[in-house]
Length: 549
Image: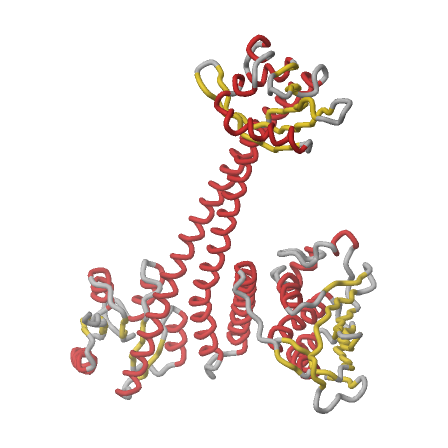
């Protein structure tokens, strides 16, 4: 595919200057259009919007400042503009930049410098265009998600109504069955050795849909002709063995008005023995359970649909998380470039620092979502190896100490582990960082956090103790669930996704360890977890209770 030629508009009242700039830019492969004053420039932009404008300030009819004002308040606020002017006054430069100019090049200019500024500005415009497009796509995806969520809510409401209706129907059937059972608990039949019905109670007759005359004195083959070949061998074998026979949800096809019908029965067949111990007959206790079978099948199908919806949700979160990485990389990359610009003042650097901090928090959320998606999808793998545990703890301390120092929190650690730990070091660093990070978040300024590691039998135990606000008893059981944190008002102040502890729990359990918390409100918390110890000892045992950090 042939690359698109970039379009640059040169605005200058001096024909020689316009011609020179046009010639220089055309040599570099740009398509160039020209305007002699501000009004011509606005008209040219409206007719054929350029990718970049090179703008002189001092012009008749409408000067460069007027053009910048028009671009800002009209429909082209994102059009990049490089001012190329001989105006040396500081006020002129500041006014141009305030009105929206992106660069200011002083005449006479260095040709290579101008080329670089033009290339850089076009590259920045391309990046902004991509970011704008991705933002629009993300907005559209979000709107679609809202619509899907509304549809899901309506679907859930409809399902709940159907379940309620079905539940009410089942309840009516149960009440009806109970009234029957008050008189006759179940269908009862007695068959003699010739498999002839000698007893058949009204409940059984009702289940069969037959009259007493059609059952009493008739053999099983005559009453259930469609089941003769299957049932007769079962009864003959029971007469021979004398063993009871039970069947659950056994299908039975019997003749009713309009043709054969298949129902499902729970049956108990008990042998009745005579004085000599010989089996004289079979007592049958039967209950029709067709409704139960159909309800179980319906419930199984409903559960399957819910599992599919949950799988689609997880796939959607994974796709969205991956797609968020691209705009975040653009934001963090260009913000980092701006942060290194020596021309920025203190206030602008503070703004950029906030941008980077917010983008970093967003990236952490995306990473947490991806970790949870991998864990749920079973795509989470570990690479355990014999690891000096003191190095793991030290790495976490080095990472978290700046955060603790900001709140004047004392961060201490003691490691009393001579053996190597059989762990994936990066994943354990991630888990321990989550626990220490939470302790820093919820410990007030001037508090204390202590990390202790020691062995107990064949386990390595790690504890993170803080002097924070503690966790109420009713919230401890759910603290390791997704999107759960103890005090939501404190959570909003401290930040956090609610995924750190669930991820940590999965990391520890994947290592074959256990995790828990001991806490009292107002007295701080102690989060602990256990890990396996490597079967080989360390080459050089660590000194007893060596302090770290």
